[in-house]
Length: 608
Image (cartoon, rainbow, N blue to C red; front, side, top):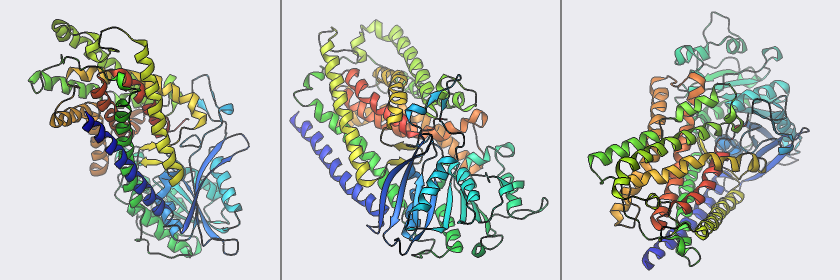
């Protein structure tokens, strides 16, 4: 037992040491090894809208030698760090960069005093023009004395591109280049385009493909009348991707670049960033000229993936260490008899397969319930709404499965509720003290997890974001509106997942090989089908150039399901090892609910 305690302490210590190392490296990449100052900030518009930003200020920029500026808008649902590739590479070249959220996304949101729900339960952000956040940010950026407001670049991914092109049209005397990444929206043609323009859009961009003929004809995007009009082409002329029209040196340049990538991958794709840098190089002379092929941002991606894994290891090992302390020792109950199916038998494999299906079959359908445009109760939670529906349906399905198992197998074998992990003591009685201790344990563990993240966040000035999975500080505006609500709506899945797994998994202490096998089985039950759905979705887009699940924006679910997979792996890992140590679901339930709510609140923050 002492050896196992030491192992948990050692794992926790190693995770902390590696976290410090990874954090230092992230700061190094983000700041070009101290050549760039990075700061976080917020702007408040006149009507109370919070605009969250991250700014990169090269130390070469000064009042005496102002640097050109870049305003970058991230895509819908993302935080400011989704723009890190463009920010890092532009700041390495001497530009001052300001990356902002789309209002209502990331950490940009109206203050709680001006957020309300309309008669259709839709969350209303008090702004009549979504562009106003980007306009406010642009005006702030150009007001800084170390920014050359006569040499500005604007651009963004997806919704960020849609809004920044309008900003560019409002400031055509100052903006020299506008670049849209994965967004075929070109503002107001009547205002004109007196600046260079580049559309960088993946050949497998699922968001664009879904708006084309049969959801698979990217040529529809290239031959769009508004785009050809901007390029000075007639109705019967073809626009050729990869061809430069006009002259970037005199602000008449136009180009469409088509790297082989998907919409959700575009901000993380080296080729996309290189096309942007090529356009930038052709547009203006930057303070520190570097070849477009000279990029380093991907190292931050690798390090952030490592930090997400380290967060999981830290929380899991901290839980194990806490459970071995005198305060929480009583949460560890005696092992219960296993009443589940015989491991590796035909019926066991069948039960595992059923659980795999039940945990993933409803995810696309749930996405379509909040993506159709028709308001319902769950659209008030933005993108997180479909995850609430998925949790409800999955929890109900697992409850039915468990009831059938008990009726056909468990009851005949003398199985009791405590054998499903519902015990609060070894005497078969309900103990309120146990529940209280479990709640205290959960509060301390969540505080440790949040504290770990906040130290990382404020030290590195970076969140933890990998494509569609994102962890941010919990915004005050969402704490009441979303955080507690997410705990409630995710309860069905978290509870029934722990209960149902006891029909196929032995959670009592065992040999390391058996523990590894049980852990793999537990993880597969939770995420295998959602992961397969995502891979099928990606395979169709990337290789067949076709967007599946087009109805009611079901393709959003095809994208976002990978975020569910990553978050669920973290939650299930913590829960698995806690279940093994406590032989009760209550400490696991109380400890993982705030974690999953945290992930849901910040992982995909659309609120409109």
